[in-house]
Length: 262
Image (cartoon, rainbow, N blue to C red; front, side, top):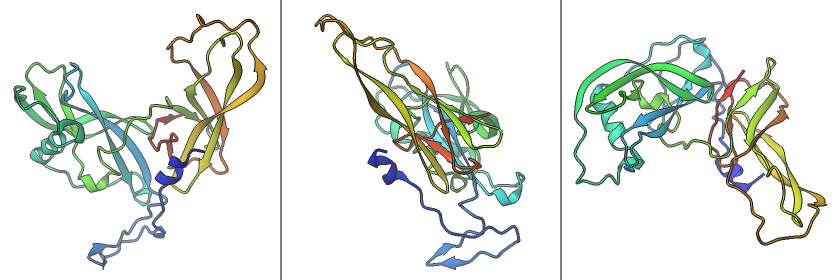
């Protein structure tokens, strides 16, 4: 696997699981977590943001969510106010270079409601602050939950090398959609194929592709006029896991998460 996987591989905190109520414990000025990070439910969401690059489309940024599994899916969480949500949108890395000569956005309505976000387990509806702007095609939404409930809020990029995956009912088999070789090789070129490679950790499963030379050469005379088109072709690549996927995040070789559905 590429070295980048080793660089982004998360480390578990080693905190044991406990469903009992515990007091806050300060250690070196920080609170001691009372829930297990290793067993937490991790999700990634895509959030629409103002058009910073001027291409006429809203930008997409990633927000990652970590939820304690010990709460059994039910929790009351604090929310941020609308000003904090807009400030989070305004100060995203890809909005820092906005041309100051551009006219500012005019907000006509602010609502605390819900919005659908892309996550590493498919589309999810979450509490959100929704900002309606003049001439907008829809509201600009930002998760209303407090930022420390997320993992690297707004800092994780969308995967460019994987396009989703499905998981079996027992959680032990994944089928990832990733790039495929050319439909036909140029005469004289070596023929290769892609094979999936998987690495597992306590919180993450990383999937990538390796190139395998088949030892064959495309028949025919090599010609300078032969080239390859730029069509992105994909194929399903099945992989088996040593243990059920559970709440682990599936990422590509650059550490970017992609959605897993059943």
